[in-house]
Image 1 (cartoon, helix red, strand yellow):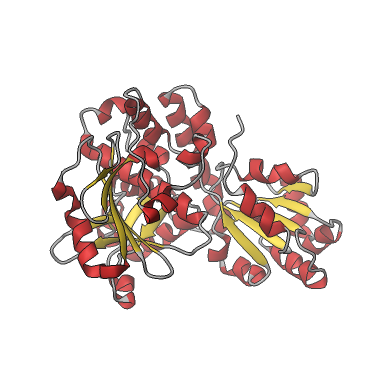
Image 2: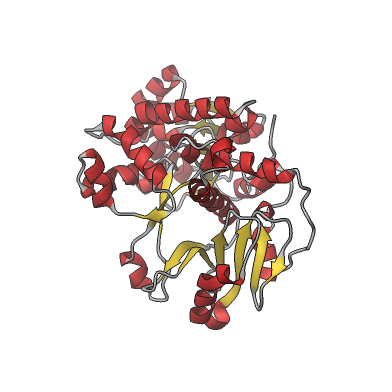
Length: 405
């Protein structure tokens, strides 16, 4: 089954005026399927092919000189190819010459970033969003800014679907598996491949056998403040080593550190970030959370639900032409807001996540605190919940069904 991707339109636009376009994102998120739609216009090469990979590594310039326009899949496997592409672009800056994909955050790899700087437009493709799965527009951000929530109800049977949807995550292959057990089997295999192969593509690490334990701990801590010394102490690693390994997992789009929001830009750098998995399906597999356990272990599901919302927000913001800053809020009184979205104009949208089907005024405590601090720059505060209607809770404050994501 082919799911239309919202990135397709901006990708086509980029190819009209940019020599090289890079689609960055985790392995198996749909990058190859997306770029192969252009195969009639451009030759397609995958560096997952061992013979081709060895040839490209041996003679990158020779390979590039043989192609005019090309799709090159998994380009991070041959970093030396990027210098050859740079030289080819410098000689001929026709738009749409190279369409690249990478399963690591290539701009975080110094040897690649230096080659691509100023010559490539980068797009991030993450696993399928809820709007892509439902084949509807990605309009959550527009509705939030305009506070244009309709009061439509959700059908009763969709409550169960929501529970399963969160645990299924967004990877296309997981979505297509027939049962939760088969989805989790795929997720375990996927994580094993990343550990045994992909990590070695981008970094040489001494204690690779510690990575499964680290992933399990990070999955349990998803949505919590990061204490790297405490994490390392559980598996015999120093905080510096944990920091290094965490950086590798970030490059592979598995986890990300969510910075703290503050009015003071410097304090954002020194306040403790939260750790988040990018996909709730992988996180729930590592924590062994099932739909049956959700009914009895609501706290564990709350953490996975927050992870799911985080992933959806990343997908939404990655498609925005504006550069939004995503963070969390926590003050000295331990008042918190799960997510703070800040526009380039410093406008703020606060989002709280609640697994329950009802919302009370007290659930807006953190959002009210954020509104008081931000003043006129505060657009709206939203409590995402599992109910069926969008409800107003005062000036700029809304309870919004989770499915509106």
